[in-house]
Amino acid sequence: MEAIRHRERWMDWVNLALGLWLFAMPFFGYMPLASSAAVNGYLFGSIITVISVAALVREQSWEEWLNFAIGIWLLAAPFALGFTGNAFAMWNSLIIGLIIVGDALWAALTVPSQSHEPGGHHPTHA
Image (tube, rainbow, N blue to C red):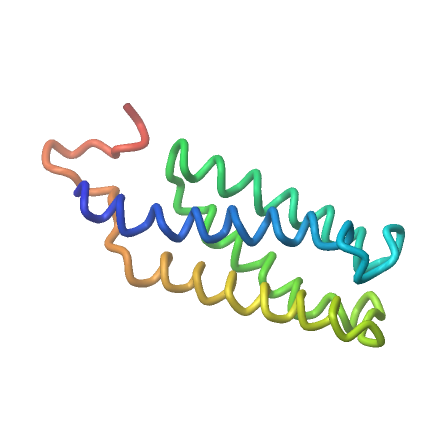
């Protein structure tokens, strides 16, 4: 069981780094700080970061599906919010969205469920 947790943990660290990157990117001057791309980055970068920290503290299966939904939003955001004219902001959102979607699907679909341990108790319900 410990090997499974270590395998999942790196995914949470990747998401943490991506969330911090997404939040910080507007401050590097590639987009106006009050633009829709920047606000999207602040908001969803913060959410991804909080989810990642929560996952590192205590794993929950819903986190992967929430990350999946956020990744889908990041793929749609440049078009929905109209920042396709800023190539850097657009590609930043698309690439991070793809990584988060892939990471979430991988974690949700390939890591065995931890809900069935010997003794019949769920590891998150101590």
